[in-house]
Length: 537
Image 1 (cartoon, helix red, strand yellow):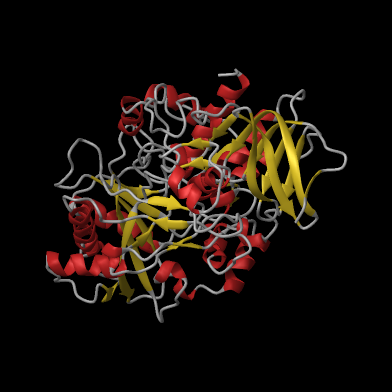
Image 2 (cartoon, rainbow, N blue to C red):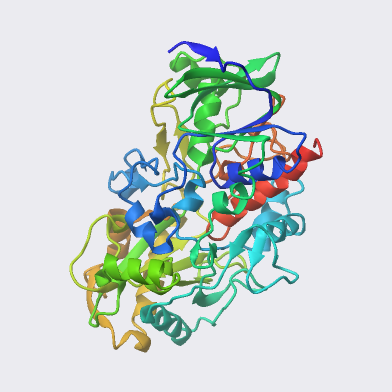
């Protein structure tokens, strides 16, 4: 397809590639200045489908390929050679439009570790103001929370009785009750606060793009596949992208801002000639700037699910779509339709924890989730997810071809650390899950075990269970690592090292995983990035 400029070629100061969580924030914040023109390019569609806005609709989104990249990993050697499904949002709002809406920031030590490792200026005291800036918590503002930010954070409107049983079981197992996982202490069990507004999902698109939608200085193009970045004299000058109307070269007068996420941002850098030189030449790509770290340092939270049958018909397994729709649309956004499904959860410090931070996270779902909910099991049941928060294994993203339409190769390399600590921690996650579900609070509900099929597995049997059943909990980060060393892909101002006027702003810049879900930290990064860009830093 021949590449041509748009006719006539509009002039934009900033091109934002990807309208996910970070891209929505950047486009919204930068376009607040009426003297700045912003182009936002998104490969997916507008966020019009009702399932994207009804919280419980996330259960239906797993089958929709139009709003999901539906990535699949390469076979994982330590997980019995299985390929794992990695859902990522391909729609305005990105993964914030299809996720479980849990609002979790991590803990101060996570960000202090970033700063200590070379991400200067990203310590806790520096990032907290940007968390507060983004947050509109219905409980109001305090020293740790924002009350009037664009991202609405709410308490759940509807909670299943099994979620209350989980919280009671957690307390019986010795975990404290915690009503704010983003408060002074993360440890304990409780209900998650969620990114919802008046019972509807508050994605990054709802929070940041809706208020900006009528601005004449913001242009949003959907169905835009960005093929490469263009350069001149070591400076990013624009992008080449394709739509149904053709392929275009669009210049940027100030900066190109990559917000494609942990998979797409390193892929686009490599397609554009920035990455490991040998890998680029193997695909016939001219090397613009050698950057060995692009695509490396991939991290993700591996998750193990414990499933049990429920003896009472109270789970979401049998809640009919008609009832959900009636309560939600005709009774003022009430009932199970407002549930994020992963209603309750918590954080625990295992016996293997090397410091004072919690190292295990739980998500409790009052339904049976097999294969990410893509396979329906008969009857009623409940599921407890558990993940190790600080894995030591590192993977990579690499090109499968030189074509932007081909998905890259994803190799998470789960459980690959030489000491075997990640596997030992996953065994601990499974053991703690079984201990929680064995508490008296579940006596009125506890049916036969499903996965694992027995309650008395040895550590060796639990390890085999993990290799056979563990999956991603959808928190990939790190492939465009931020730092001050020569191998860092971006510097602490998120500028791509060795190239002018090009930044990466998304979860790929995180040096290490935060202690929990990654959406709130991604939005924080973009809020701070917008400020850096506006100040010319």
